[in-house]
Length: 340
Image (cartoon, rainbow, N blue to C red; front, side, top):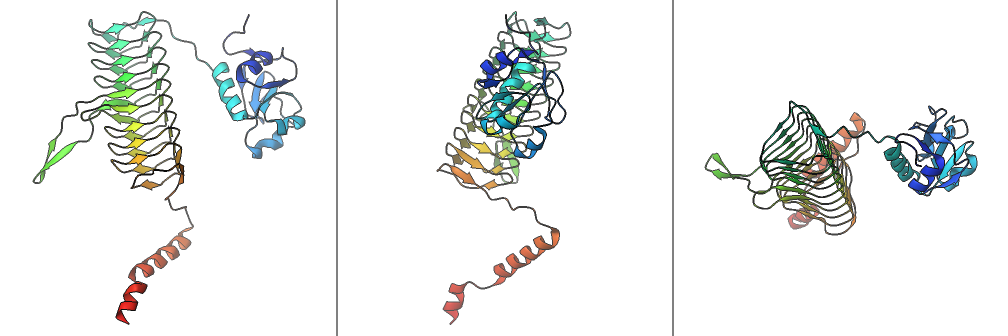
């Protein structure tokens, strides 16, 4: 028989995370801890070389590490080429939260024309509007709102006070964290002299399977067609994604990124924190944009792209700025040649 959730033998873990076990397979671990703070019953990992100094003195029951570090480990080891991946897999096995009991809380408001699977859990003060479909083992936490016509796939979790706008579709095994707003109106206006005329946003938002969306992130509904977040996308907190965008499968977007409307981002891209992306651009598959960069034109080839200015001490920055200003005031070489 397998061990209960939150407790695993090293033999079980080795098989489940894809590691080679060095040590007693019957040793039991219950939680994850850092190398310097771990004790008996704890599983730790070594990925960053700066923590290698703790390897020989750790009191952990076992450590996930690479083959290059295995010889220096004084305790049992789960050895694999990518120990950080092993840590992620082990964390999912050891830290899995129990599913709340199925049912609709007495204070929740579920419209008679909504369909909520009998295995789903609808928490306190949650709202499910007419025509919404809530799949098997879905969790709607306290205060979450599922507006008319939404569809939520099985085993998805909608955390407290998150809002799904009308007609939003969410796939299976997704996590939408607290306070996220999916499917609010896109930012669409036309000028009428000095005034603005609102353009109705009639599209929706389609979210694929295994997507995670961070707290207070906003994804706008499309103007005519759906905004689309493909399978496996991971989005951090406080990200803004404009209307009609398409984010390719398995792309990861860090916190405070702002993406204007009608942007297409390819698959397996990495978008660093606080990146700004102008509207109507295309970014190819396998592109990395480093933190604080501004993207003002399409990126059509895979690679790493940067435009942010690294921090300097204040005096150095003012010196650079003075040099830039002098260059801007200096006549171009071509202008001097013309004068001559």
